Image (cartoon, rainbow, N blue to C red; front, side):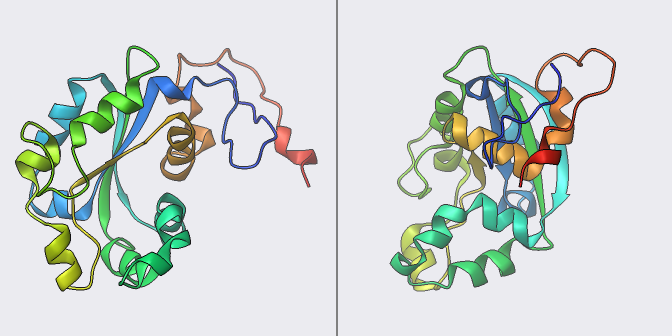
Length: 191
């Protein structure tokens, strides 16, 4: 695979079958409780973890990652941007890239997580077995719910999450190493 941009803003890289991958983020509460290895072992049952790194979160990363919450912020009784800054910025998360065997990878990984509210998540799911928070408790404490883990919802989200947490320069993670030689910079003539 060679590195190229499809000239669609936010597309990160072209020529990638994003539905074969999932980006997983182990949230600060997961790390605080020492559950990273256990949670990733459960995720790895659905595919190969081809990259894992601990990242100190920057504000832009978490705002891109949770853009949907920021856009829908009026529906929450919490200052979403303020909470994301307090809970994530400067905190460590573990980011993993998983390659699955087929185009159902994001859906299969999402199925492992369980409902976003650990108290409503089914037994046998990561949040159902390991989660301790609840939507009721988080609302009473005027905060967002702590639910251990995020994974990409679908192919478009995998693309966005890869760009946010790995970046286009890590394209070698997606397929076998590209052939040697210069790669053109398709961004140089994009306004």
